[in-house]
Structures are given as structure tokens and as C-alpha cells.
Amino acid sequence: QVQLVESGGGSVQAGGSLRLSCAASGRTFSTIAMGWFRQAPGKERTIVAAIARNGKGTYYLDSVKGRFSISRDNAKNAVYLQMTDLKPEDTAVYYCAARRTTNTIMVVTRTFDYSDWGQGTQVTVSS
Image (tube, rainbow, N blue to C red; front, top):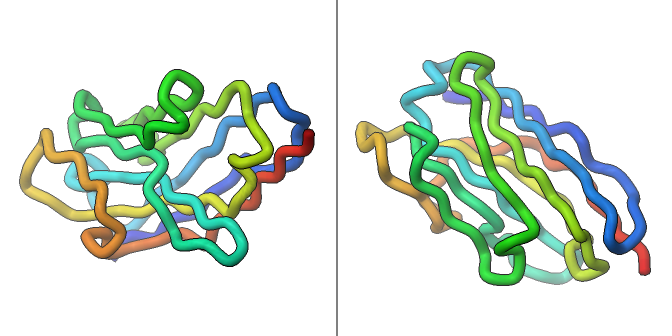
């Protein structure tokens, strides 16, 4: 099992930036594919970005391409989501998630493929 703790959320105005961090513990981080999800009130939890074990494969939701960037530091057991040019529609609770895998290049995008989740961090973007 992997324990995940997100941080870095907050309230910003449209056009602003935030950097979310997710600290992982409990398992060798380099064996884990990671993802960032978000859930707005009344909506389903959806993938925002994902990154492979080796950090070279990534996935982005179309609406965040060019604005968000996912990265990981296996030495620090952490994954990050740099968010720029934030829009009100980015408002949601953001979760990081982990999936153990033997595949170093696999990018995991489906919610039910992830086994471990953080508690979430709120991001609020005002217009």
C-alpha cells in the first residue's frame, strides 16, 4: 500500500498558477505509476494528468494541455502538477493516485486502475 499526501492547493484568480505536490510513502516510489485527478461538486472524478514510472511517458486531459505539467522526482518520492493560466473551470478537489506496475513506460489513465489515493487538496479559481 502507498500513502499519499497532497499539498499546494489554494485560491487564485484566473490566469494565476499553483503547484501541487504529492508525497508518497510505503513502497518504492519508482515502481509506481502516478496520476492527478480532480473532482468538482456534482461531477465525476476525472483524470487530469498521468506519468509513467520512468517519468518519460505522460498524459494530459485535453482541456489542460499546454497549461498543466506533471513531473516526478523518484529520489524524493514525489509527483508534482504545475498549473498555469488557471481558469474557473479548473476549480475542484485535486487528488493524486498511485498504481503499482512492472511496466516502466505505462501511463495509467483510468480511475479504477489506481489502487491508492490521497485525501485531496482544494483548488479554487475565481474570475
